[in-house]
Length: 260
Length: 244
Image (tube, rainbow over all chains, first blue to last red; front, side, top):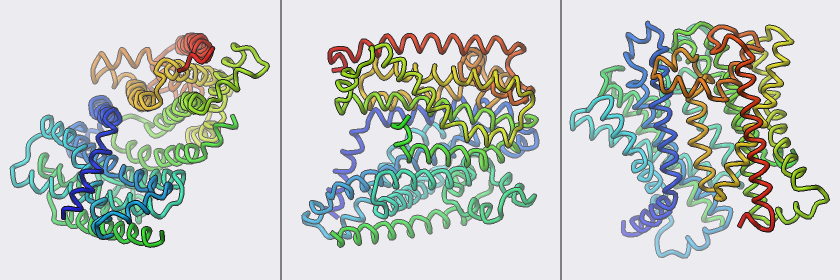
């Protein structure tokens, strides 16, 4: 455990080196909320207005998840850079097991995501509504698992790609698929409706339903807005994603170091 | 131009972003809003957002050259400083335009062309817009002189300029949201470019102008101002190791 704490400390120091980057990223996220969401609010389809009431309120939880995703994914960039610069040899010389090292990296990626996401979640609560203390704990727990899964996914991609170019391209593909094919920006009912009309392939509709970003956003919405209604599937989807990618990343990371 | 196509990842990423924005966001958001033909409206704006982002990229080249000492080589070339800087500015706009051309073709396939003469005029204004954005990027790059700060500033500026324009939504809704947003969007060059492109493509509903000459003049002013300022500042920055 002590070794994992060392890894966390090191990764947090690295994270805080990007202070201006973090300020810039938060500003970009807030621009989406305080400009784009407010304008879309005026344009909402009346039928949909009855369902989600306000686009601003609908989008704020989605934005929190978006911010969490972007910051938790950053760990992959660092791991990819270490791979390219062959820093593993130094890593292997550290007095800790490979599993501790791998788990420490995934954990630090997830915790960094939580730290970055905190002001966005606070803004969401301040402007949209407060959950009960129990709901707040569930939200934090689910977001932590989501951050771990994202961090794992990012590390798994980082160790599977040999160059920054390939990592950035793969990251882009994952970003766009997970963001746009989810209920982060729009209610899932619209994706479902397009699927029923045959304008959207059904496998993408299914993907949007099981997408952990959809489920995490909808979980926050269900607690602070009341819609969509809460279901255990929301938590299960994030947990499965988290467990699969945490272990996949740890396994891939250990394999990578064993190849050195 | 050659430098630009070395950024294969950037080129691929922007193309993926463009297509996924159309296929996912455009299609679904058009169901979310009560704006007639919003899908076509959004695809038109998306082309301008992509053109803007591609034209911004010239600033990163300037940092690359400064860091690798290419400035000294450029200064040794048998061209005047003004020619060098003007060529750089035009190259930045031109390559952005060439990069966006296939994406504009995809947009036109989706939204169609109303009047070919109008479309050619709109295309010309987009050329000027790309040169203006390129000049703005050069100006900010030589003023800031730090690639990290530049990267952050361009990200924030990109978000603000695009969100406070009619690239994603009609001006009437921006004005309704808050008059301040509406006022900024009214004078935003991205608004001029997006609306002229839609006018050229024949999507005339929800345009923010009645006379296309006004946004065209706005783009010309934007182009002249930033091309001139960019040239003067860049010229001064590279002379005698002034960058450091």
